[in-house]
Length: 147
Image (cartoon, rainbow, N blue to C red; front, side):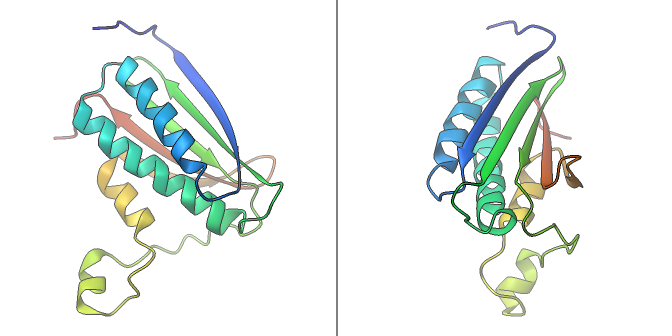
């Protein structure tokens, strides 16, 4: 197995156009495989990263041509942190979306499961405001699944 350096990172920037999230998904998956993540963990990460990018494109940047979504992946020797930053036309409200139970009962619309999925697939995640404007969704994942 590849023994990654104690610290390693990649940076990506995509336009706010649906479809470009696939580029990020595959790049992050390759990076995670290189770091020794199990295939199952990489698949979870791919889904979480895709959802985060879609959220940034659709909601943060409102699919505005010319705005970017920046993605940074940092390996610190024990875990991988992925930050997805939009240019913040719509600041994150802090509202937690309804869970799957409410949707199955018909108490919530079927769309909007992205943030819920992310929380279920990674070890930790959250939002913060960027110092230069915009929203940052960060996700952390260790090589081994949480217990």
